[in-house]
Image (cartoon, rainbow, N blue to C red; front, side, top):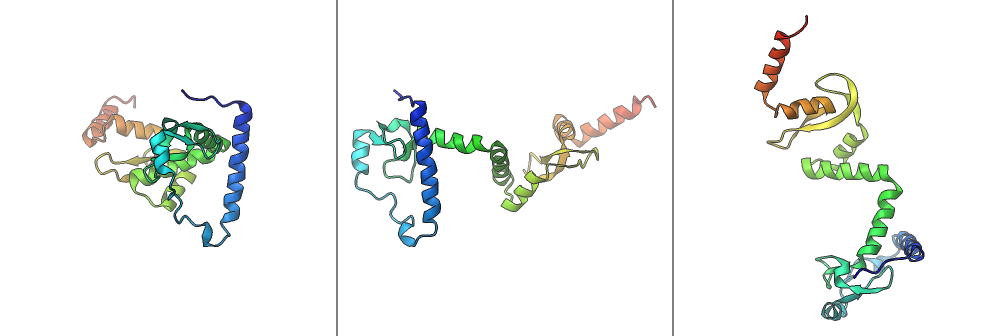
Length: 187
């Protein structure tokens, strides 16, 4: 059963997270004794696994291991903070600045899907409005890519992207559509 967190406990957790962030900033200028080193090497891991319970590093409550996200590189096999605390932390980060979060997600998507460098992906995200390469209108642009090779072909507007998608990137279909328009123009 999941323990519910009261608003007071949530506020206390947020205060702890802010304190941790400030501590982390201070540690960045400290000597190597603060390095990662043997960060996860501790003797209590076997006891935690055997008991099936663990204390969350953030809220300090003892909870079942099922209330922690999995972490392969941790001796206990789970993260050091519970799902509730992790959710609050993630929510504060994501909803504190939604525009930044959306841009970061888009950059990560471009890097993962198209194998772009960080700089290329950032430039695509920052330059979202421009001249469509098909209709030559100034509009918000999307990244057009080949579904066969997954390589970027260019940047086009939403309507032109839909047109290519509905034609299934088939040149013959697009040429037939052009012939159709020529034959049936009011001209």
